[in-house]
Image (cartoon, rainbow over all chains, first blue to last red; front, side, top):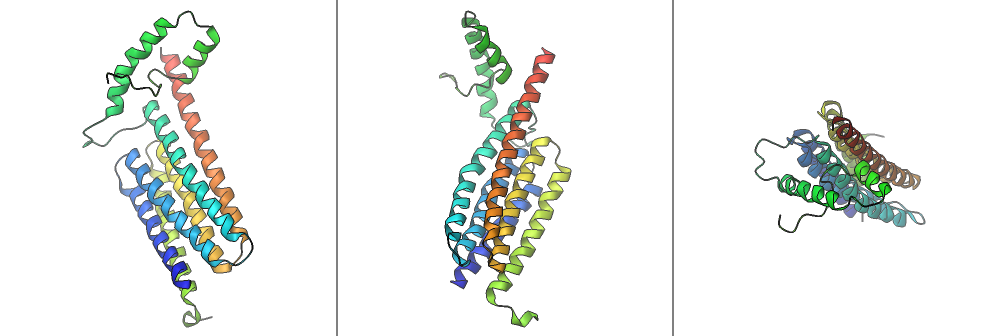
Length: 148
Length: 101
């Protein structure tokens, strides 16, 4: 059992160190996010798994597993939300050697689409249109046009 | 207690705590350097995960189960904080685009 706990601790620590190195060394926000979210989640999860295996007491393993599940559920959501808002806020400066930005193309054709839809929806009640203009900057809708 | 007296688990925990400290330091350099706000938020998110791992490793060392609760609460707060800052970034951007147009 102590071998298992030691392996979890060492591998988890290694993953977490890789995540931190990636956070420092990688060139743009999305790559840093990739390192921090995936390796960081796995590393922290392994460290908590070591707790579940080693610490005696009622319900410790349950709490540790619940924490791991919570981490696995929320880390991708948090990363997605921050990446999405940063992209639409224009804070992201992609790496020089990035070849393909499919989201920019989709937004480019999506702006015409949403402008068209706004022209179609002139008769809508003002509340929904005000909400749309407040929450959604142009092209924020997730629906990619079928011809994109 | 000399170094010889440590058990395998204690050795491993001390090594892990040292590695985690290095990782937290590295993540904080990104918090200080990060060119934009999302960079800093992502780095602080990783710092929160690292603190969770730190609490876990220390729980293995001390065999106190209370640290796990602290790790759970820390993860919750990190998630809420990240989502709140993401909403903030989005709202600031939409306000700017409204004043520009």
